[in-house]
Image (tube, rainbow, N blue to C red; front, side):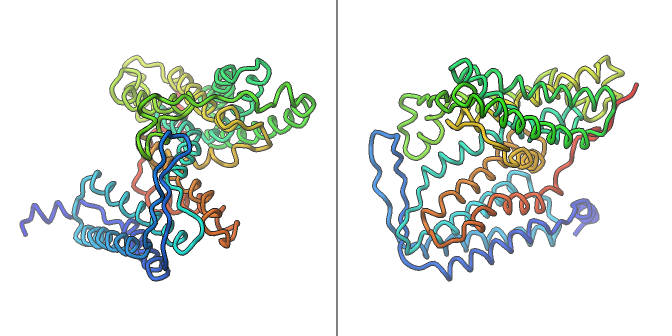
Length: 424
């Protein structure tokens, strides 16, 4: 081996996080493979489609063992790459993580569904995944905008909460769900204005003020819910006004993915547009360049004429408006009335998705979908195997969050100037 090749190997940092996670996944799948017996019923049909797809009944064990072989193969490759310090393209790592993640989840579903009276309702679970992921994606996009400009937005949880509250209140009062679609981002923007005021103008620690705003949002919505809303339930907190589904003709009839992607409300379609637009403008426009400059090197941005304070303030408010819009999904997007703490920690999961996605809109969306799928799977499990303890099922989304952050967050680098007040 030449000196140049040796020097190149030294530059590749060795990390055992992925190999350890992959080995754990391989062991778990081996347990599933040994424990899987009998047939499993896989249901691909969705009630929204005009035709019926028959259930697939097959033996679960052979499929699980194929997944075991795939996971062990990826694990072996990752161990070789880590030991030899081989530089692997990011797309190859993404493929490996996808194979291991999907194999583990499918293996678990086949294990739970084998020799059971219930069915693995794949399409319905994916529909539920999109519904659960929508507020997470809006919250993660909020974090991307805020932190890329240099402001840590811990207040995503509060933004979701006030968005849900304002959305249902406006929809009930004006008797149209579209009024809530306007009020929700405005409520989030108002909370974002407070975050910008204290963190940008007065230099208060951004993490501390974010936690304070979360407590403020929870206390304020709880107080208003217990006083104003409960006294006028039919006027200010009715679930009669929810966003209707808008199926796209033709596309909605595509097997499996049609009802998942193309039979949704306008809020989900806005989420699609937000991810695409932000992915483009953040890296391909003057607005995105100025935003990122303020988050990476505000002094340099100031020297070329960018008003750092104004840029940080405006984009913090914009990011919070995104989260407020996502909060509307808990009420008018789901046909539910507002209840205490309806966001239930989703803001913190959105924050984890943003970090796991490396402050990139596409990455944040992918991580949010992963968390959403974990929660949708947890909701499906009682129908497959009622004997599984409910407390164990409710833990699944949060365990996935902890494992994902612990295993992969070390590979992310935050914007250099976040949580650092800029003073001229």
